[in-house]
Length: 217
Image (cartoon, rainbow, N blue to C red):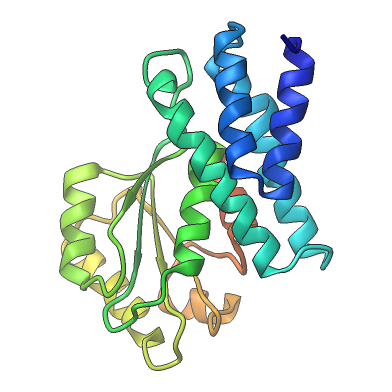
């Protein structure tokens, strides 16, 4: 049986190259060898996905490579998640995610969900075409640290601002931070819409979420 370091290295490499079956196998090997679930997550899986994000941002990886690595991460998380829930791996907080009303694009949102879960957040995914009232309801129900919303069409961009206004009007924003993203979104729009931050890609979204939680800003 491979030793601890070899197993974690193999898992790291499997996620990096998008090998979903290999990722599941190496998680199972690590668990069978007595490696702590939190170590599997924080010493192999998260660093690998962070490297995927770095490679994407540097232009060495493109969307297809990022998607297959995300699929491998998701498969590994499905195997690891039941073990994490029973151990000492604390959640960094809850994140509510959704694509705003009128928009049915989900690839970017799904990538963000994988990156955030890999980073240690608990994810509540509302899906696509999410009305403002559903975001308000989810905040009341889950009391998230962060709400992430996306729009991938210029015609649905205004729904981000409208949703933020609805959250504020409902009096549920409180300490919840709102981050946004999507193809037509930029930092200037985020500021004008009243968001707390903007992320151009999934890796940046994970870093932004972690920084907001860490700072309390």
